[in-house]
Image 1 (cartoon, rainbow, N blue to C red):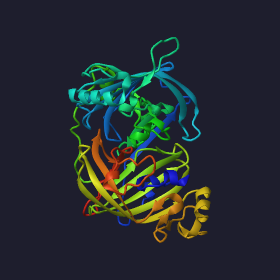
Image 2 (image 1 turned 120 degrees about the horizontal axis):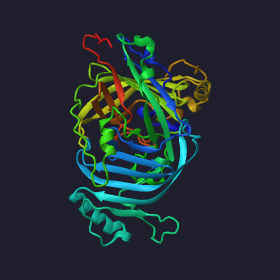
Image 3 (image 1 turned 180 degrees about the horizontal axis):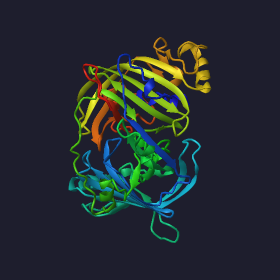
Image 4 (image 1 turned 180 degrees about the vertical axis):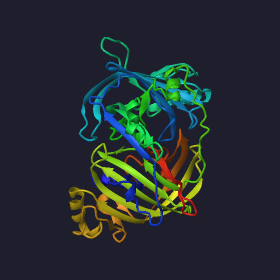
Length: 466
């Protein structure tokens, strides 16, 4: 089981710790305190209109925004695809209709709910004449049910039909034309999040009752999709995508714009003027508890030194969706090199990371016992592992039982953005099947949840006071 979710660099590491535990020899790291109250709704209540809050990037890459409507046990999903990473040039739209029923709380992904859905029909609406021509050619080659039609832009074409009872139409499935899958509906959760940023000037205002008067943001998390497009139709989700927000969320202009859109009027998002092309040096951390495959939960911390060539990382996995009960800690370090600007995602850059040092800290009895019974001394020294005690695994070239290897090289993609008042760092999404990023062809084409900047390391080692 360990190998399934601990097999690559940025996915593999788990830490049960706080900012104070980050090992920095001569650096005084200060981070803004983020107070985030989360309430998980059981059973999940997801009736209404939900939308993306920004242009989403899926593996491929695919650029899209989503508008999902749930009424009672029925759904209508709108997916708008684009040519660019800012979702300003519409390519085509997908509309899917069907029914959904929540079954039970998930046994694999704690905090989530499993559901079953039935798809009735799917339509495609091309918005670009060049894409319409390509779609016509693909239909002639792969979809006999639609053979003979000429595809034109801003016209709907049914590519999937599963008639309900008492309907006489024939069933057919041409969703394979675009490798479409809606299995994200098989895993879901709804959270209410109330976030307040505290600093030295306002941390005690109103006796810490600031958040009491804030209206919480409602978020809908749906299952992740496989990073390999060919495997999406058979993949059952074990983690989540970027959450959707209610279409009427007060502080989300993009949500309201997407809510007003329809199949013949795709939303065109404004260009983001806040894209950053500055250095990534500094300290970055997860905003909250992230979900990873096979029931693991993660917090990440990265430190890029001001010399522009070295980095450190701490990766925190937990056994609960609130990240309170840690299982394993891994501290890694090495070098990195910015190779060039990305050719497939505007505003992103291609990097190469070298990992040369690695220490492991078991955080519970189960993990400690597992490490003490590793075969052939393949993970440190057998019998010497203790809870909360660090041990280097460089001599054993990593920890085979956890799928960790050192030294290793991975090819990465990184994007730096400014969202509202925060700088955020986007690191490439790990392959769903756990394969390593050992070559340029395996470089990610989508991103993990954003990391927020906690500090900027100065050349004179003086850090800004947050």
